[in-house]
Amino acid sequence: MNMQRKNESYKPKPAVIKSVTVENPRVRTFRLAFLKKEDSESFSFRPGQFAMISVPGIGEAPFSMCSSPYDRGSFEISVRKIGNVTNSMFSLNRGDVIGVRGPFGHGYPLEKCKGRDVLIVAGGIGFPPLGSAIECILKSREDYGKVWVIYGVKDFEDIIYRNRMKRWTSHRDVNISITIETPCEEWKGCIGRVTDIFSNVRKSGRNMVGLSCGPPIMLKFVIDGFRKLGIEDANMYVSLERMMQCGIGKCGHCNIGNKYVCTDGPVFSYAEIKNMLEKVW
Image (cartoon, rainbow, N blue to C red; front, side):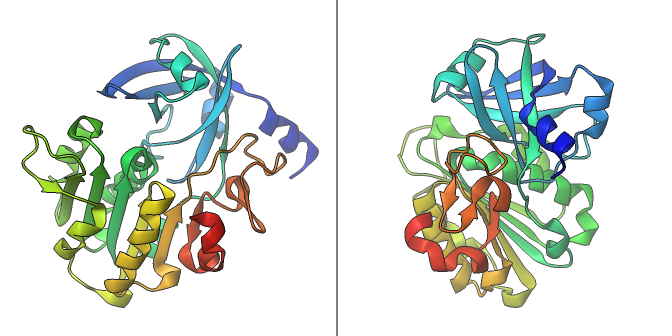
Protein backbone atom coordinates (compact mmCIF):
# COMPACT_ATOMS: atom_id res chain seq x y z
CA MET A 1 0.00 0.00 0.00
CA ASN A 2 1.57 3.33 -1.04
CA MET A 3 1.59 6.29 1.35
CA GLN A 4 -1.23 8.16 -0.40
CA ARG A 5 -3.45 5.07 -0.45
CA LYS A 6 -2.58 4.39 3.20
CA ASN A 7 -3.54 7.92 4.28
CA GLU A 8 -6.79 7.71 2.30
CA SER A 9 -7.70 4.46 4.07
CA TYR A 10 -7.70 6.32 7.39
CA LYS A 11 -9.88 9.18 6.19
CA PRO A 12 -13.70 8.75 6.26
CA LYS A 13 -15.50 10.01 3.19
CA PRO A 14 -18.85 11.76 3.70
CA ALA A 15 -21.96 9.90 2.58
CA VAL A 16 -25.61 10.84 2.85
CA ILE A 17 -28.37 8.49 3.99
CA LYS A 18 -30.73 8.08 1.04
CA SER A 19 -33.22 5.76 2.74
CA VAL A 20 -33.80 3.70 5.88
CA THR A 21 -35.67 0.38 5.78
CA VAL A 22 -36.90 -1.21 9.01
CA GLU A 23 -36.15 -4.94 8.72
CA ASN A 24 -37.26 -5.81 12.26
CA PRO A 25 -37.27 -4.04 15.66
CA ARG A 26 -33.48 -4.39 15.98
CA VAL A 27 -32.24 -4.23 12.37
CA ARG A 28 -32.40 -1.44 9.82
CA THR A 29 -30.99 -1.22 6.31
CA PHE A 30 -29.40 2.08 5.27
CA ARG A 31 -28.85 3.09 1.66
CA LEU A 32 -25.86 5.42 1.40
CA ALA A 33 -24.51 7.63 -1.36
CA PHE A 34 -21.22 9.53 -1.31
CA LEU A 35 -21.46 13.32 -1.40
CA LYS A 36 -18.53 13.66 -3.77
CA LYS A 37 -18.75 12.29 -7.29
CA GLU A 38 -15.14 11.08 -7.26
CA ASP A 39 -15.74 9.10 -4.07
CA SER A 40 -18.79 7.44 -5.60
CA GLU A 41 -16.98 6.58 -8.83
CA SER A 42 -14.00 5.04 -7.00
CA PHE A 43 -16.08 2.92 -4.60
CA SER A 44 -16.57 -0.66 -5.75
CA PHE A 45 -16.79 -3.84 -3.72
CA ARG A 46 -17.16 -7.60 -3.85
CA PRO A 47 -19.82 -9.44 -1.83
CA GLY A 48 -18.31 -10.21 1.57
CA GLN A 49 -16.16 -7.10 1.82
CA PHE A 50 -16.91 -4.51 4.50
CA ALA A 51 -16.68 -0.78 5.18
CA MET A 52 -15.97 1.15 8.35
CA ILE A 53 -18.95 3.41 9.06
CA SER A 54 -18.48 6.38 11.39
CA VAL A 55 -20.94 8.62 13.21
CA PRO A 56 -19.36 11.98 14.05
CA GLY A 57 -18.67 12.32 17.76
CA ILE A 58 -19.54 8.68 18.49
CA GLY A 59 -17.12 6.33 16.70
CA GLU A 60 -17.03 3.79 13.88
CA ALA A 61 -17.84 0.14 13.32
CA PRO A 62 -17.52 -2.41 10.47
CA PHE A 63 -20.48 -3.39 8.29
CA SER A 64 -20.64 -5.65 5.24
CA MET A 65 -22.33 -4.30 2.16
CA CYS A 66 -25.63 -6.10 1.54
CA SER A 67 -26.61 -4.67 -1.83
CA SER A 68 -25.51 -5.64 -5.31
CA PRO A 69 -22.11 -4.27 -6.42
CA TYR A 70 -23.82 -3.55 -9.74
CA ASP A 71 -25.95 -0.83 -8.08
CA ARG A 72 -23.46 1.94 -8.75
CA GLY A 73 -24.04 5.33 -7.15
CA SER A 74 -25.19 3.98 -3.79
CA PHE A 75 -24.90 0.92 -1.56
CA GLU A 76 -26.63 -0.62 1.42
CA ILE A 77 -25.62 -1.86 4.86
CA SER A 78 -27.80 -3.59 7.44
CA VAL A 79 -27.31 -2.53 11.05
CA ARG A 80 -28.29 -4.37 14.21
CA LYS A 81 -28.82 -2.19 17.28
CA ILE A 82 -26.19 -3.50 19.69
CA GLY A 83 -23.63 -0.82 20.71
CA ASN A 84 -22.82 2.89 20.83
CA VAL A 85 -22.35 3.35 17.08
CA THR A 86 -25.40 1.33 16.07
CA ASN A 87 -27.57 2.94 18.75
CA SER A 88 -26.65 6.36 17.38
CA MET A 89 -27.33 5.20 13.82
CA PHE A 90 -30.88 4.28 14.78
CA SER A 91 -31.48 7.96 15.55
CA LEU A 92 -30.37 9.00 12.04
CA ASN A 93 -32.75 9.70 9.18
CA ARG A 94 -32.75 10.30 5.46
CA GLY A 95 -30.51 13.25 4.64
CA ASP A 96 -28.13 12.80 7.55
CA VAL A 97 -24.41 12.47 6.77
CA ILE A 98 -22.02 9.82 8.09
CA GLY A 99 -18.46 8.73 7.24
CA VAL A 100 -17.34 5.74 5.17
CA ARG A 101 -13.90 4.10 4.90
CA GLY A 102 -13.28 1.17 2.61
CA PRO A 103 -14.10 -1.22 1.17
CA PHE A 104 -11.76 -3.57 3.01
CA GLY A 105 -10.88 -7.25 3.04
CA HIS A 106 -11.57 -10.14 0.71
CA GLY A 107 -15.03 -11.22 -0.39
CA TYR A 108 -16.62 -14.43 -1.62
CA PRO A 109 -14.88 -15.74 -4.78
CA LEU A 110 -18.01 -15.96 -6.89
CA GLU A 111 -15.96 -16.56 -10.03
CA LYS A 112 -15.04 -19.96 -8.55
CA CYS A 113 -18.74 -20.72 -8.08
CA LYS A 114 -19.59 -20.40 -11.76
CA GLY A 115 -20.83 -23.61 -13.33
CA ARG A 116 -21.51 -25.10 -9.87
CA ASP A 117 -24.46 -25.53 -7.54
CA VAL A 118 -24.26 -23.06 -4.64
CA LEU A 119 -25.38 -23.66 -1.06
CA ILE A 120 -25.67 -20.46 0.98
CA VAL A 121 -26.12 -20.69 4.74
CA ALA A 122 -26.78 -17.60 6.86
CA GLY A 123 -27.34 -17.18 10.57
CA GLY A 124 -28.92 -14.08 12.13
CA ILE A 125 -27.23 -10.83 11.14
CA GLY A 126 -24.74 -12.86 9.08
CA PHE A 127 -27.20 -12.59 6.18
CA PRO A 128 -26.09 -9.17 4.74
CA PRO A 129 -22.85 -10.18 2.95
CA LEU A 130 -24.57 -13.30 1.62
CA GLY A 131 -27.48 -11.17 0.46
CA SER A 132 -25.01 -9.26 -1.68
CA ALA A 133 -23.64 -12.54 -3.05
CA ILE A 134 -27.15 -13.70 -3.94
CA GLU A 135 -27.83 -10.47 -5.81
CA CYS A 136 -24.65 -11.03 -7.85
CA ILE A 137 -25.53 -14.63 -8.65
CA LEU A 138 -29.02 -13.66 -9.80
CA LYS A 139 -27.58 -10.88 -11.97
CA SER A 140 -25.81 -13.60 -14.00
CA ARG A 141 -28.15 -16.48 -13.23
CA GLU A 142 -27.14 -18.52 -16.27
CA ASP A 143 -23.55 -18.78 -14.99
CA TYR A 144 -24.49 -20.85 -11.94
CA GLY A 145 -26.22 -24.11 -11.16
CA LYS A 146 -28.94 -24.59 -8.58
CA VAL A 147 -28.96 -22.22 -5.62
CA TRP A 148 -30.03 -23.21 -2.12
CA VAL A 149 -30.37 -20.57 0.60
CA ILE A 150 -30.74 -21.72 4.21
CA TYR A 151 -31.38 -18.98 6.75
CA GLY A 152 -31.67 -19.43 10.51
CA VAL A 153 -32.68 -17.02 13.28
CA LYS A 154 -33.52 -17.32 16.94
CA ASP A 155 -37.01 -15.80 16.87
CA PHE A 156 -39.65 -15.18 14.21
CA GLU A 157 -39.32 -11.40 14.53
CA ASP A 158 -35.58 -11.65 13.83
CA ILE A 159 -36.15 -12.49 10.15
CA ILE A 160 -34.80 -9.86 7.76
CA TYR A 161 -34.99 -9.38 3.98
CA ARG A 162 -38.53 -10.74 3.70
CA ASN A 163 -39.25 -8.82 0.48
CA ARG A 164 -35.87 -9.69 -1.00
CA MET A 165 -36.41 -13.38 -0.40
CA LYS A 166 -39.77 -13.23 -2.19
CA ARG A 167 -38.02 -11.66 -5.18
CA TRP A 168 -35.17 -14.17 -5.09
CA THR A 169 -37.52 -17.16 -5.21
CA SER A 170 -39.03 -15.87 -8.45
CA HIS A 171 -35.80 -16.89 -10.20
CA ARG A 172 -35.22 -20.33 -11.68
CA ASP A 173 -33.84 -23.03 -9.38
CA VAL A 174 -33.53 -20.80 -6.30
CA ASN A 175 -34.71 -22.57 -3.15
CA ILE A 176 -34.97 -20.71 0.17
CA SER A 177 -35.53 -22.44 3.51
CA ILE A 178 -35.92 -20.60 6.81
CA THR A 179 -35.72 -22.05 10.30
CA ILE A 180 -36.25 -20.45 13.71
CA GLU A 181 -35.15 -21.78 17.09
CA THR A 182 -38.08 -20.56 19.23
CA PRO A 183 -41.56 -21.87 18.34
CA CYS A 184 -44.39 -19.34 18.04
CA GLU A 185 -47.94 -19.19 16.70
CA GLU A 186 -46.98 -16.97 13.75
CA TRP A 187 -44.45 -19.47 12.40
CA LYS A 188 -45.55 -22.66 10.63
CA GLY A 189 -42.17 -23.56 9.15
CA CYS A 190 -39.11 -25.43 10.37
CA ILE A 191 -38.04 -25.24 14.02
CA GLY A 192 -34.37 -25.89 14.75
CA ARG A 193 -30.86 -25.12 13.55
CA VAL A 194 -29.79 -24.41 9.99
CA THR A 195 -28.15 -27.83 9.73
CA ASP A 196 -31.50 -29.47 10.51
CA ILE A 197 -32.69 -28.61 7.00
CA PHE A 198 -29.57 -29.58 5.08
CA SER A 199 -31.59 -32.63 4.05
CA ASN A 200 -33.46 -30.32 1.63
CA VAL A 201 -30.28 -29.99 -0.41
CA ARG A 202 -29.41 -32.48 -3.13
CA LYS A 203 -25.85 -33.77 -2.95
CA SER A 204 -23.64 -32.77 -5.84
CA GLY A 205 -20.22 -33.26 -4.26
CA ARG A 206 -17.40 -31.76 -6.31
CA ASN A 207 -19.90 -29.67 -8.24
CA MET A 208 -21.11 -27.74 -5.16
CA VAL A 209 -19.73 -24.71 -3.36
CA GLY A 210 -20.74 -23.71 0.16
CA LEU A 211 -20.90 -20.08 1.35
CA SER A 212 -21.71 -19.16 4.93
CA CYS A 213 -21.73 -16.36 7.49
CA GLY A 214 -23.01 -16.37 11.04
CA PRO A 215 -22.03 -16.89 14.67
CA PRO A 216 -18.80 -18.90 15.12
CA ILE A 217 -20.56 -21.83 16.82
CA MET A 218 -23.00 -22.06 13.89
CA LEU A 219 -20.15 -22.15 11.38
CA LYS A 220 -18.62 -25.16 13.13
CA PHE A 221 -21.78 -27.20 12.51
CA VAL A 222 -22.23 -25.78 9.01
CA ILE A 223 -18.77 -27.03 8.06
CA ASP A 224 -19.77 -30.51 9.23
CA GLY A 225 -22.93 -30.26 7.15
CA PHE A 226 -21.00 -29.14 4.08
CA ARG A 227 -18.71 -32.14 4.43
CA LYS A 228 -21.65 -34.55 4.64
CA LEU A 229 -22.90 -33.11 1.36
CA GLY A 230 -19.55 -33.91 -0.22
CA ILE A 231 -18.27 -30.34 -0.49
CA GLU A 232 -14.49 -30.21 -0.45
CA ASP A 233 -12.63 -28.04 2.08
CA ALA A 234 -11.33 -25.71 -0.63
CA ASN A 235 -14.92 -25.13 -1.85
CA MET A 236 -16.27 -24.04 1.56
CA TYR A 237 -16.10 -20.28 2.20
CA VAL A 238 -16.98 -18.69 5.53
CA SER A 239 -17.03 -15.07 6.66
CA LEU A 240 -15.72 -14.76 10.20
CA GLU A 241 -17.39 -12.48 12.72
CA ARG A 242 -14.58 -10.69 14.50
CA MET A 243 -14.57 -7.18 15.95
CA MET A 244 -12.50 -5.06 13.58
CA GLN A 245 -11.34 -1.59 14.57
CA CYS A 246 -8.98 -0.25 11.91
CA GLY A 247 -9.83 -2.28 8.80
CA ILE A 248 -6.24 -2.31 7.52
CA GLY A 249 -4.40 -4.77 9.77
CA LYS A 250 -2.66 -2.24 12.03
CA CYS A 251 -4.43 -2.48 15.40
CA GLY A 252 -4.21 -6.29 15.70
CA HIS A 253 -7.65 -6.48 17.29
CA CYS A 254 -8.96 -9.06 14.79
CA ASN A 255 -5.88 -11.29 14.82
CA ILE A 256 -6.39 -15.07 14.70
CA GLY A 257 -3.12 -17.00 14.69
CA ASN A 258 -1.16 -15.56 11.76
CA LYS A 259 -4.27 -14.11 10.09
CA TYR A 260 -5.91 -10.72 10.31
CA VAL A 261 -9.63 -10.94 9.60
CA CYS A 262 -9.79 -7.41 8.21
CA THR A 263 -7.06 -7.91 5.59
CA ASP A 264 -6.76 -11.69 5.06
CA GLY A 265 -10.54 -12.15 5.34
CA PRO A 266 -13.21 -11.69 6.43
CA VAL A 267 -14.01 -14.45 3.92
CA PHE A 268 -11.75 -17.51 4.14
CA SER A 269 -11.87 -20.93 2.56
CA TYR A 270 -12.14 -23.66 5.17
CA ALA A 271 -8.89 -25.08 3.83
CA GLU A 272 -7.16 -21.88 5.02
CA ILE A 273 -8.43 -21.91 8.59
CA LYS A 274 -9.15 -25.52 9.51
CA ASN A 275 -5.90 -25.81 11.46
CA MET A 276 -6.91 -22.84 13.62
CA LEU A 277 -10.27 -24.21 14.78
CA GLU A 278 -9.69 -23.62 18.47
CA LYS A 279 -8.97 -19.94 17.76
CA VAL A 280 -11.69 -19.42 15.16
CA TRP A 281 -14.57 -21.08 16.92
